[in-house]
Length: 458
Image (cartoon, rainbow, N blue to C red; front, side):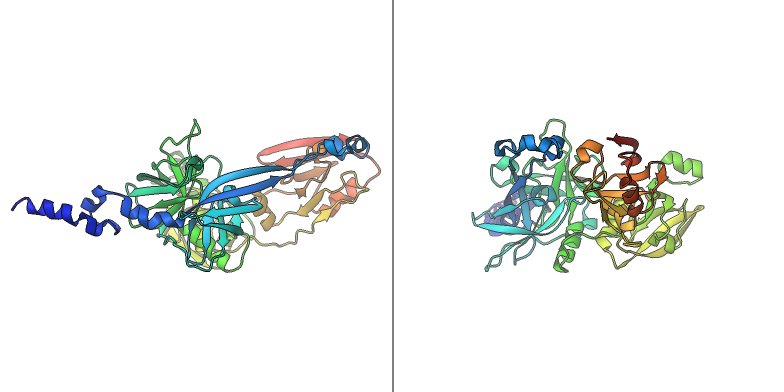
């Protein structure tokens, strides 16, 4: 009789083979029940991007352009095909994928596991977060994955990565959650908070599902840390909580993702800095600068304060703090805990989008200008956020360098701080200086962390 339980377990196996495993014994038998539940909601995505080949500076020059009038010499558009994966989030055809898969696509095809094909369109996308929300139209309800609250995910949990690696068709790989709150080493795609897994993720898995043993979506696979181009057991997924925030904004009719603006300069507080400042603990973000209209300054925070949590969740890096704010969303309030001179305090901060005040006052220089087509704007908090500029930057921002960008060296995103010795505060000032009779200029330009000088004359 002592062998009966084992016999019963073996006989009973087919009875729960179609269900999600709930016990350790069931888990050891197979991942198949989870895959059967989750795989139909993971799709293959084929995207086509038409890239315009940029004309050379000589082709754009009024004198030399006549030598390039031969149609055979004109640059031809190039078609680039990309391959990735996506996850169906609702029965009416809402799909999430990576921005780098579909964000710039002109033609998107979504293929389900039952081989049905649909044309999709992008409803909302964000390059910084590397997420995009798509819509496919179908009269029949589609299988979809429920989202799981990301803060309940723990290191050591079993996880499955489902996607279309290398275009071989849908594939499932298994592993565990190997890390949380990762904010670096993600191959340059997306910024912020990532879930780390050792489930193999390869090219083509991007946009696919990372699911738990209940068949719930933990995150969207986005990148790997690799030196060879293949999976080395360190993959990154965008948490489901951020996916939910994208869905909410898409349902509200937005086409660009809006994240709250902090208006803060800060850095992670490490052990050395904590010791220097007399703190008995490291961790958190020390504020080194505040914009005059920052909502954190309005709530009472000061330079030197150390932010330790947002919305009840610990934060240790600026990108993690922005993630927490993005999950809460603009228009809401978040409880922020911080230390000031060793004493912990708590305030409520109103989360706002970066203000468009003062107005940008965009100016596009006319044909008679020294740099025709150059588009400049006044710097306000929204421009700071759009171009990821330092809070203290002054000058005018380049939104479009125009047809002579190759000749001057200017690029979109540059900030012209000084032009011909004159510090700039408004695009009209730059327009007046570049309209002068003297056909030369010298400018001081901030480009990322670099400050460069550009000289031009003719």
